[in-house]
Image (cartoon, rainbow, N blue to C red; front, side, top):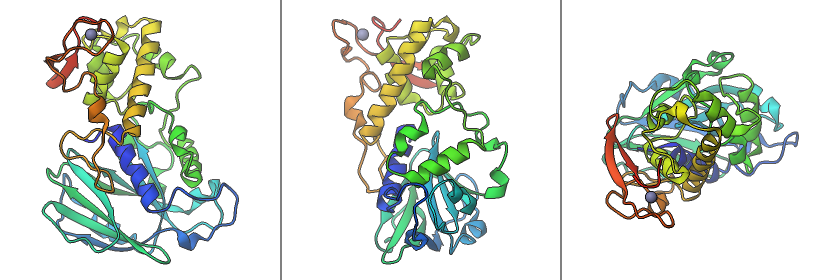
Length: 335
Ligand SMILES: [Zn+2]
Protein backbone atom coordinates (compact mmCIF):
# COMPACT_ATOMS: atom_id res chain seq x y z
CA UNK A 1 0.00 0.00 0.00
CA UNK A 2 1.22 3.53 -0.58
CA UNK A 3 3.42 4.70 2.27
CA UNK A 4 5.02 8.07 2.93
CA UNK A 5 7.49 8.03 -0.02
CA UNK A 6 4.75 7.03 -2.45
CA UNK A 7 2.39 9.74 -1.21
CA UNK A 8 5.23 12.28 -1.38
CA UNK A 9 5.87 11.12 -4.96
CA UNK A 10 2.21 11.77 -5.79
CA UNK A 11 2.39 15.18 -4.12
CA UNK A 12 5.42 16.15 -6.17
CA UNK A 13 3.75 14.87 -9.31
CA UNK A 14 0.72 17.06 -8.67
CA UNK A 15 2.81 20.12 -7.86
CA UNK A 16 4.82 19.71 -11.06
CA UNK A 17 1.94 18.83 -13.37
CA UNK A 18 -0.21 21.70 -12.10
CA UNK A 19 2.62 24.23 -12.16
CA UNK A 20 2.37 24.93 -8.44
CA UNK A 21 6.08 24.59 -7.84
CA UNK A 22 7.41 27.49 -9.85
CA UNK A 23 6.18 30.52 -7.97
CA UNK A 24 7.91 33.75 -7.11
CA UNK A 25 9.23 34.08 -3.59
CA UNK A 26 7.28 35.71 -0.78
CA UNK A 27 6.04 39.24 -1.19
CA UNK A 28 6.20 39.48 -4.96
CA UNK A 29 3.25 40.49 -7.06
CA UNK A 30 1.25 37.60 -8.37
CA UNK A 31 -1.33 36.99 -10.99
CA UNK A 32 -3.66 34.74 -9.01
CA UNK A 33 -5.52 33.79 -12.16
CA UNK A 34 -2.63 31.50 -13.08
CA UNK A 35 -3.61 29.15 -10.24
CA UNK A 36 -5.76 26.19 -11.28
CA UNK A 37 -9.44 26.74 -10.62
CA UNK A 38 -11.98 24.02 -9.73
CA UNK A 39 -14.26 23.74 -12.75
CA UNK A 40 -16.14 20.48 -12.48
CA UNK A 41 -16.42 17.26 -10.51
CA UNK A 42 -17.52 13.92 -11.87
CA UNK A 43 -18.46 11.09 -9.51
CA UNK A 44 -18.94 7.51 -10.69
CA UNK A 45 -19.90 6.27 -7.24
CA UNK A 46 -20.95 7.69 -3.89
CA UNK A 47 -18.80 5.66 -1.54
CA UNK A 48 -15.18 4.58 -1.26
CA UNK A 49 -14.07 3.48 2.21
CA UNK A 50 -16.49 6.15 3.48
CA UNK A 51 -19.25 8.08 1.70
CA UNK A 52 -17.77 10.77 -0.56
CA UNK A 53 -18.72 14.30 0.59
CA UNK A 54 -20.06 15.01 -2.89
CA UNK A 55 -22.06 18.17 -2.19
CA UNK A 56 -19.24 19.78 -0.22
CA UNK A 57 -16.71 18.93 -2.91
CA UNK A 58 -18.97 20.40 -5.60
CA UNK A 59 -19.24 23.56 -3.51
CA UNK A 60 -15.50 24.11 -4.21
CA UNK A 61 -16.27 24.98 -7.83
CA UNK A 62 -14.76 28.37 -8.65
CA UNK A 63 -12.11 28.09 -5.90
CA UNK A 64 -8.40 27.94 -6.69
CA UNK A 65 -6.01 25.16 -5.75
CA UNK A 66 -3.41 27.01 -3.67
CA UNK A 67 -1.08 24.25 -2.53
CA UNK A 68 -0.63 20.50 -2.38
CA UNK A 69 0.79 19.32 0.91
CA UNK A 70 1.32 16.03 2.68
CA UNK A 71 1.21 14.95 6.29
CA UNK A 72 2.27 11.34 6.99
CA UNK A 73 0.36 9.33 4.37
CA UNK A 74 -2.33 11.94 3.70
CA UNK A 75 -2.41 14.26 0.72
CA UNK A 76 -3.71 17.70 1.65
CA UNK A 77 -5.08 19.98 -1.07
CA UNK A 78 -5.64 23.59 -0.02
CA UNK A 79 -8.34 25.52 -1.85
CA UNK A 80 -9.36 29.13 -1.61
CA UNK A 81 -9.45 32.50 -3.30
CA UNK A 82 -6.51 33.66 -5.39
CA UNK A 83 -4.00 35.67 -3.38
CA UNK A 84 -2.40 38.69 -5.03
CA UNK A 85 0.83 38.40 -3.04
CA UNK A 86 2.77 35.30 -2.03
CA UNK A 87 3.95 34.68 1.48
CA UNK A 88 2.25 34.11 4.79
CA UNK A 89 -0.70 36.24 3.78
CA UNK A 90 -1.63 33.47 1.34
CA UNK A 91 -2.89 31.53 4.33
CA UNK A 92 -5.70 34.05 4.78
CA UNK A 93 -7.04 32.97 1.38
CA UNK A 94 -7.50 29.30 2.31
CA UNK A 95 -11.15 28.34 2.66
CA UNK A 96 -11.04 24.54 2.67
CA UNK A 97 -8.77 21.55 2.71
CA UNK A 98 -9.37 18.31 0.88
CA UNK A 99 -7.75 15.32 2.51
CA UNK A 100 -7.04 12.26 0.40
CA UNK A 101 -5.91 8.86 1.65
CA UNK A 102 -4.89 6.41 -1.05
CA UNK A 103 -5.84 3.38 1.03
CA UNK A 104 -4.24 0.23 -0.37
CA UNK A 105 -4.54 0.74 -4.10
CA UNK A 106 -5.45 4.38 -4.73
CA UNK A 107 -3.87 6.01 -7.80
CA UNK A 108 -4.24 9.70 -8.58
CA UNK A 109 -3.35 10.69 -12.13
CA UNK A 110 -3.14 14.01 -13.93
CA UNK A 111 -4.53 13.95 -17.48
CA UNK A 112 -4.80 16.68 -20.09
CA UNK A 113 -8.12 15.60 -21.55
CA UNK A 114 -11.45 14.18 -20.43
CA UNK A 115 -10.69 10.75 -18.99
CA UNK A 116 -11.99 7.73 -20.82
CA UNK A 117 -13.25 5.97 -17.76
CA UNK A 118 -11.96 2.49 -17.06
CA UNK A 119 -12.80 -0.04 -14.39
CA UNK A 120 -12.19 1.25 -10.84
CA UNK A 121 -12.05 4.90 -11.92
CA UNK A 122 -14.25 6.47 -9.24
CA UNK A 123 -14.13 10.22 -9.71
CA UNK A 124 -12.39 13.00 -11.55
CA UNK A 125 -11.91 16.71 -11.03
CA UNK A 126 -11.35 19.25 -13.80
CA UNK A 127 -9.03 22.10 -12.93
CA UNK A 128 -8.68 25.01 -15.31
CA UNK A 129 -5.95 27.59 -15.74
CA UNK A 130 -6.00 30.47 -18.21
CA UNK A 131 -5.00 28.37 -21.15
CA UNK A 132 -5.42 24.71 -20.29
CA UNK A 133 -7.39 22.14 -18.35
CA UNK A 134 -6.16 19.33 -16.11
CA UNK A 135 -8.10 16.31 -14.97
CA UNK A 136 -7.31 14.62 -11.67
CA UNK A 137 -8.53 11.06 -12.01
CA UNK A 138 -8.86 8.77 -9.00
CA UNK A 139 -8.68 5.01 -9.47
CA UNK A 140 -8.83 2.58 -6.56
CA UNK A 141 -9.22 -1.16 -7.13
CA UNK A 142 -9.93 -2.08 -3.52
CA UNK A 143 -11.68 1.16 -2.54
CA UNK A 144 -9.95 1.49 0.85
CA UNK A 145 -9.01 5.06 0.02
CA UNK A 146 -11.11 8.03 1.02
CA UNK A 147 -11.64 11.74 0.33
CA UNK A 148 -12.71 14.20 2.97
CA UNK A 149 -13.14 17.95 3.05
CA UNK A 150 -12.71 20.31 5.97
CA UNK A 151 -13.66 23.97 6.12
CA UNK A 152 -10.65 26.07 7.05
CA UNK A 153 -12.23 27.45 10.21
CA UNK A 154 -12.71 23.87 11.46
CA UNK A 155 -8.95 23.40 11.27
CA UNK A 156 -7.78 26.36 13.30
CA UNK A 157 -6.45 25.61 16.74
CA UNK A 158 -5.97 22.02 17.85
CA UNK A 159 -6.32 19.70 14.92
CA UNK A 160 -7.83 16.34 15.81
CA UNK A 161 -6.92 14.71 12.50
CA UNK A 162 -3.21 14.44 13.27
CA UNK A 163 -3.15 14.72 17.06
CA UNK A 164 -1.83 11.16 17.39
CA UNK A 165 0.58 11.33 14.48
CA UNK A 166 4.28 11.58 15.26
CA UNK A 167 6.65 14.10 13.70
CA UNK A 168 7.71 13.72 10.09
CA UNK A 169 10.96 11.69 9.77
CA UNK A 170 12.36 14.47 7.58
CA UNK A 171 11.30 18.06 8.26
CA UNK A 172 8.75 19.11 5.64
CA UNK A 173 10.78 22.15 4.64
CA UNK A 174 13.38 19.86 3.09
CA UNK A 175 10.84 18.87 0.43
CA UNK A 176 9.79 22.40 -0.33
CA UNK A 177 12.72 24.03 -2.08
CA UNK A 178 10.74 24.56 -5.26
CA UNK A 179 7.42 25.65 -3.87
CA UNK A 180 7.63 28.86 -1.86
CA UNK A 181 3.87 29.17 -1.58
CA UNK A 182 3.61 25.64 -0.25
CA UNK A 183 6.46 26.39 2.11
CA UNK A 184 4.84 29.57 3.34
CA UNK A 185 1.63 27.66 3.90
CA UNK A 186 3.43 24.76 5.58
CA UNK A 187 5.19 27.04 7.97
CA UNK A 188 2.06 29.00 8.74
CA UNK A 189 0.08 25.81 9.19
CA UNK A 190 2.74 24.31 11.44
CA UNK A 191 2.19 27.13 13.86
CA UNK A 192 -1.54 26.50 14.11
CA UNK A 193 -2.07 22.77 13.94
CA UNK A 194 -0.64 19.66 15.48
CA UNK A 195 2.43 19.31 13.31
CA UNK A 196 5.13 18.65 15.89
CA UNK A 197 8.61 19.77 14.96
CA UNK A 198 11.65 17.68 15.77
CA UNK A 199 13.69 18.88 18.76
CA UNK A 200 17.04 20.59 18.39
CA UNK A 201 18.92 17.29 18.53
CA UNK A 202 16.81 15.99 15.66
CA UNK A 203 15.27 12.59 15.09
CA UNK A 204 18.04 10.77 16.99
CA UNK A 205 17.43 12.55 20.29
CA UNK A 206 13.69 12.35 19.79
CA UNK A 207 13.68 8.58 19.17
CA UNK A 208 16.00 7.95 22.11
CA UNK A 209 13.81 9.84 24.57
CA UNK A 210 10.52 8.57 23.13
CA UNK A 211 11.65 4.94 23.47
CA UNK A 212 12.72 5.04 27.12
CA UNK A 213 9.57 3.49 28.60
CA UNK A 214 8.40 1.50 25.59
CA UNK A 215 8.39 -2.25 26.30
CA UNK A 216 7.10 -3.22 22.85
CA UNK A 217 9.23 -4.54 20.03
CA UNK A 218 11.09 -2.00 17.96
CA UNK A 219 9.22 -2.69 14.75
CA UNK A 220 5.73 -2.52 16.29
CA UNK A 221 6.67 0.72 18.00
CA UNK A 222 7.86 2.30 14.74
CA UNK A 223 4.88 1.03 12.72
CA UNK A 224 2.48 2.61 15.16
CA UNK A 225 3.54 6.04 13.84
CA UNK A 226 3.36 7.94 17.12
CA UNK A 227 7.10 8.29 17.67
CA UNK A 228 7.75 9.12 14.04
CA UNK A 229 5.19 8.96 11.26
CA UNK A 230 5.32 7.37 7.84
CA UNK A 231 7.62 4.41 8.56
CA UNK A 232 5.35 1.67 7.23
CA UNK A 233 6.04 -2.02 6.81
CA UNK A 234 8.45 -1.89 3.87
CA UNK A 235 10.50 1.05 5.12
CA UNK A 236 10.55 -0.27 8.67
CA UNK A 237 12.21 -3.53 7.59
CA UNK A 238 14.62 -1.54 5.41
CA UNK A 239 15.51 0.98 8.11
CA UNK A 240 16.12 -1.68 10.76
CA UNK A 241 18.33 -3.65 8.37
CA UNK A 242 20.31 -0.51 7.52
CA UNK A 243 20.72 0.32 11.21
CA UNK A 244 21.71 -3.28 12.03
CA UNK A 245 18.95 -3.52 14.63
CA UNK A 246 16.68 -6.49 15.27
CA UNK A 247 12.96 -5.80 14.79
CA UNK A 248 12.36 -7.94 17.89
CA UNK A 249 14.41 -5.77 20.27
CA UNK A 250 12.47 -3.98 22.98
CA UNK A 251 12.33 -0.31 22.09
CA UNK A 252 13.58 0.80 25.52
CA UNK A 253 16.74 -1.28 25.09
CA UNK A 254 18.08 1.14 22.45
CA UNK A 255 21.34 2.75 23.48
CA UNK A 256 21.73 6.41 22.59
CA UNK A 257 24.11 5.56 19.74
CA UNK A 258 21.68 2.94 18.41
CA UNK A 259 18.84 5.46 18.41
CA UNK A 260 21.19 7.67 16.39
CA UNK A 261 21.85 4.84 13.92
CA UNK A 262 18.11 4.22 13.63
CA UNK A 263 17.38 7.90 12.96
CA UNK A 264 20.00 8.05 10.21
CA UNK A 265 18.71 4.79 8.70
CA UNK A 266 15.07 5.97 8.69
CA UNK A 267 15.97 9.28 7.06
CA UNK A 268 18.27 7.70 4.48
CA UNK A 269 15.69 5.04 3.61
CA UNK A 270 12.81 7.48 3.24
CA UNK A 271 14.94 9.95 1.24
CA UNK A 272 16.21 7.27 -1.13
CA UNK A 273 12.70 5.91 -1.63
CA UNK A 274 11.34 9.38 -2.47
CA UNK A 275 14.21 9.90 -4.89
CA UNK A 276 13.29 6.63 -6.61
CA UNK A 277 9.65 7.67 -6.86
CA UNK A 278 8.50 5.20 -4.20
CA UNK A 279 8.16 1.42 -4.26
CA UNK A 280 5.79 -0.35 -6.61
CA UNK A 281 5.06 -3.87 -5.45
CA UNK A 282 1.92 -4.16 -7.55
CA UNK A 283 -0.49 -1.23 -7.93
CA UNK A 284 1.31 1.97 -7.06
CA UNK A 285 1.65 4.53 -9.85
CA UNK A 286 2.63 8.18 -9.75
CA UNK A 287 0.51 10.94 -11.30
CA UNK A 288 2.10 10.31 -14.70
CA UNK A 289 1.33 6.58 -14.56
CA UNK A 290 4.92 5.53 -13.83
CA UNK A 291 5.79 2.98 -11.14
CA UNK A 292 8.26 3.70 -8.34
CA UNK A 293 11.73 2.21 -8.66
CA UNK A 294 12.77 1.69 -5.04
CA UNK A 295 11.85 -1.99 -5.22
CA UNK A 296 15.16 -2.61 -7.01
CA UNK A 297 16.99 -1.06 -4.06
CA UNK A 298 15.32 -3.03 -1.28
CA UNK A 299 17.92 -4.71 0.95
CA UNK A 300 15.67 -6.76 3.23
CA UNK A 301 11.98 -6.47 2.32
CA UNK A 302 10.89 -9.20 -0.09
CA UNK A 303 14.32 -10.91 -0.08
CA UNK A 304 13.50 -13.97 2.06
CA UNK A 305 16.13 -16.70 1.68
CA UNK A 306 18.54 -14.46 -0.23
CA UNK A 307 22.04 -13.59 1.02
CA UNK A 308 22.33 -10.56 3.29
CA UNK A 309 23.85 -7.64 1.37
CA UNK A 310 25.90 -6.25 4.26
CA UNK A 311 29.62 -6.52 3.63
CA UNK A 312 31.16 -9.60 5.27
CA UNK A 313 27.82 -10.92 6.57
CA UNK A 314 27.13 -14.59 5.83
CA UNK A 315 23.47 -14.50 6.87
CA UNK A 316 20.37 -14.94 4.75
CA UNK A 317 17.29 -12.74 5.03
CA UNK A 318 14.49 -14.36 7.03
CA UNK A 319 10.80 -13.67 6.71
CA UNK A 320 8.68 -14.03 9.84
CA UNK A 321 5.25 -12.84 10.86
CA UNK A 322 5.35 -10.22 13.57
CA UNK A 323 2.06 -8.77 14.82
CA UNK A 324 0.35 -10.08 11.66
CA UNK A 325 2.80 -8.28 9.36
CA UNK A 326 5.68 -9.77 7.37
CA UNK A 327 9.04 -8.84 8.82
CA UNK A 328 12.27 -9.32 6.89
CA UNK A 329 15.59 -9.31 8.71
CA UNK A 330 19.04 -10.85 8.83
CA UNK A 331 19.47 -13.05 11.93
CA UNK A 332 23.25 -12.59 11.89
CA UNK A 333 23.91 -8.85 11.63
CA UNK A 334 20.73 -7.35 13.05
CA UNK A 335 21.00 -7.38 16.84
ZN1 LIG B 1 23.36 -9.77 7.65
